[in-house]
Length: 459
Ligand SMILES: [Zn+2]
Image 1 (cartoon, rainbow, N blue to C red):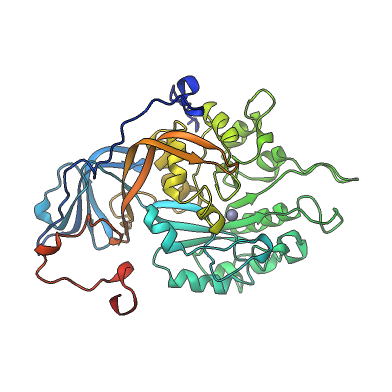
Image 2 (image 1 turned 30 degrees about the vertical axis):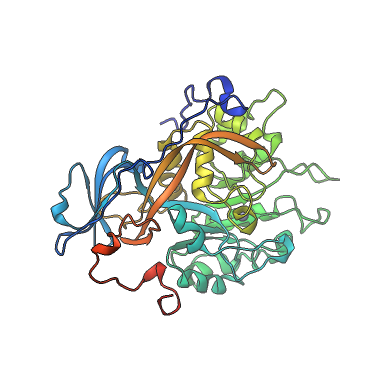
């Protein structure tokens, strides 16, 4: 099956590229005058019924109005007209979209680790992901084998699901990434005392990142040292590698390190390049996307957004999307700089692709089914019956919404994805506007907040 589908007419006239976008009347389902009420009853085989939403589950090829029932933390049924009489809590999802909990495969949530070298602060996964409908995130190389035990403390303390691409450099994401002497392969091999045996299921791949090196090439600091070490570990563990990579010209007797070689020669099908919409040289002087992108994607090499603080540019993203080359996965690369910069959140990054002309179904596919496949956890990112009940309930606002890129430039868009409710493992993990709450006067007893709402002594 051909993996790429070309967009049709959605960027007609280039209206989105400049100031000529037609005004669109602002519209919000929740602002439209129909208040939503949760219906409660003591008994029912379902714990929750999300009623009347437009379900988008690309893994099941569903994009239509359906009900989603949840029982025992799992998806119990997805069908038309499931009876509210069967559910303890029926949430009115009419006018809203219901999708699998989103998967963000590039974040930095090892918040107790400070990589001073990059002047970055990392972020708290639950706080930045759950509000955006993200229920699974993958930390992209913040930790290496030396720091992985501390990272796992954060994984254990978090509510949501945090997985990891482990850094090929043992200390993790700091200046040691430039030093091949820190690429310790034996303890990263399968079995025995290795890191993969110690933390089964926690590591979904290897990260190779930022490898300069900052010194001239020599017998140790070879052009591909980081990429080759990561691919070796990936190959031995049968796991993908995520590359944060930049090309470097020939130096002395050392040949040029090219991007084409990364995606077609060094990388394997299933390996990932993150930040692929960041570098203007990917577009040739005629404005065309380099041919090898298409070749590599057709072979199964994965192109991930990894927006971050500086890795998403309109002058790259627009030609790619206009020419029919879509990302395989949408991700944020959230750290403090990205959170406070132009990335903001998963839904903000997804909204940009919606405004660039991708369909909502494709945007959701790149944020659910595709990333699940890339991290080889196909049981995630879907609402198939029996799956863990990770769910996002959101709306697509229409109006005049502007977005910024890493080059400080603004694009006029007309859509914004606004998440309203997130469920993780069948429990409500984010619901600030009370889709799951009765009117306060109708509650004979008002419980103290619990779960995500609970503070010190319920404050
Ligand atoms: Zn990153």
